[in-house]
Image (cartoon, rainbow, N blue to C red; front, side):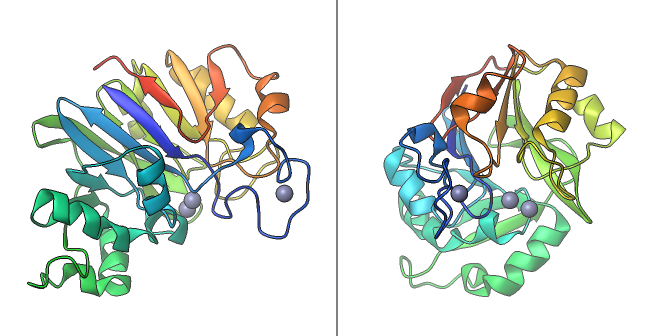
Length: 255
Ligand SMILES: [Zn+2]
Ligand SMILES: [Zn+2]
Ligand SMILES: [Zn+2]
């Protein structure tokens, strides 16, 4: 099973528009962050997690040629606003693209992207998706998938576990019943916004505490702001914890 991190940035992306800080003007490519998203390939199936505003650029850059299903974490703009680009994958599939997430995300997408649910016969002009609300483990195209409930400020976001990998972006709290679903991980991708605390995201020290509690083989922190210089912050992290970067590919044990 292979996980590709298509984007690892916070909602502004890095560089931030009109910012001249050291990270935004850095020439380290690991400080260039598109909005957070992941692509998971397992048993011949391909799952996309979230459709960021940079989905088209991410798909071209990392050669994403086929998506069998989309797993949504939540409805915030940085995670959904590239939904229109899914039409390219409709063309590859030759039919509607199945999407999954929680009830709140479904309600929001149906309002904001009503055209994608229209089932129009004009194939190609607009995307065509279906949406299933899931709140318990299920099998997706033969692959066991576990939605993980996460606190994200005042709303509930969904983390996703597939085999030995879990992707938990946009969270500042993991309920005990969700922690129980995250044992024995090979890879944990976890929100670690910035060094300072934030009301809706784990800070880097908080994320490290979660990694210490769950003990995955490897933890990568994502949804990073321009307060995070890749080289400087990486040097202070425990050995099994690292910063994620755009285009990072991780081969993961299946369970
Ligand atoms: Zn976000
Ligand atoms: Zn900056
Ligand atoms: Zn969010």
